[in-house]
Length: 219
Image (cartoon, rainbow, N blue to C red; front, side, top):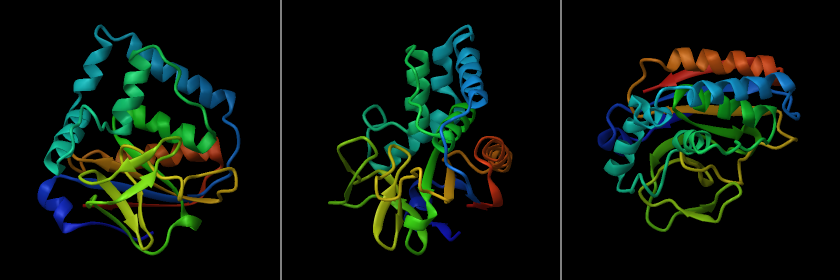
C-alpha cells in the first residue's frame, strides 16, 4: 500500500489527509444485515429537525472549499459523500451494488467523507493524490467521460483512476475482486480518520469477511 499526497495538493489544500485501508475481501451480494444498517442510517438523517443541515457539516464544507481551491465549481462537481446525502434527503434509494461497495457507501454517509475504492490487482505502482491536469479524463463508473482538470484525483503509474467525485472503471471493484484499497478523503484534517478507518475495518469484517487488514493515515 503505497499512497502519498502530491506537494501541489498540499499547497492548495493544506489540511488534506487520507485514511487508507487495504484488505482481502469476499465480494458478494449485500446481506439483509447491511441493508438494515443502510436503512437505519438514512432514517436517522431524515428524522433530524432539518435533514438538509447535514449538507452544511464541517466535512462537506471542507470538501467544497477544496474543490474551489483547485478550480472546480463544487455546485457542479460534488464529492460522492455529498451526492449520497442529497439522494437520502431527496427520498431516493441509494444504489445497491455489492457488500463491499455498499459498505463503503454506508461509511461515507456516516462520516460525511468521500471514499475511493479500488481493486488492488488493477493498480500499478504508487498511488498519488494530486490535482487533475489539463486534458486528463477517464470513464467514471456508470458515467460519461469525466473532465479531471482541477478535480482532486488519485493517479497510479498508468494515470488517473479515482476522484472523490467518481472513480474510474479501470480500477473498479467487481465480483472478481479479492483485495481492495479504500481511501477515506478528508480535506479538514486527520483528527477523526483513525476512528473512521477502524469503523470501516469493522464493517468490512462484518459484511465482506475482510482479513489481513492494514491501515495507514497519510498527511
